[in-house]
Image 1: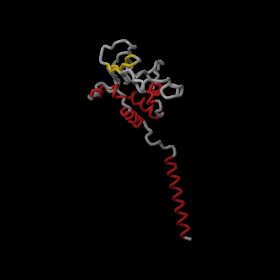
Image 2: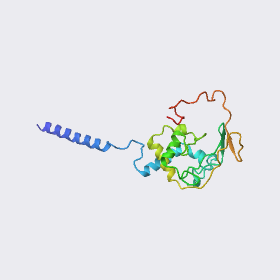
Image 3: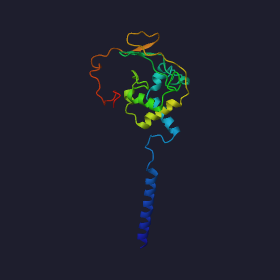
Image 4: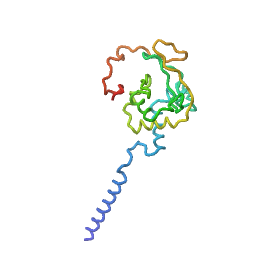
Length: 196
């Protein structure tokens, strides 16, 4: 009889422990998903760092001497290709020269679909197709982090149309060899179309 009571007590305690574990984990965050503002900003900073955003958008980074006092404030080094010449934009929340008037939704749309709030396309070399499949949590963590930066006033040069020369340094991407040349336009729904 005492063996049965011990077994019943153990099963009861085990049931309570399982119920407590289920209650503690139900609705708990997925590993890696931010649960509060501080974690969300830390996650955004991490994603911006490993995503290579500083490589182009932080002055001096390409030369191995980043100026983090002007982190993500844009660059005046142009990137030349078939689209013309583009310059890495100011990603700080400066209202006149950066993303200060953009909402988090605007930033996420630019990351995922390559579309600015004014409906113009984000041009190369910005690798937005790489970010098209970001989870909501990660995309909005990046947006929140960018909105949290100190605003830096820095207007980068405007895009130059094909054939228009730049007044400063430019990385020139060569004409692609046949293997790398685009062979077709992506179909609607494919990554990189903005319609997925």
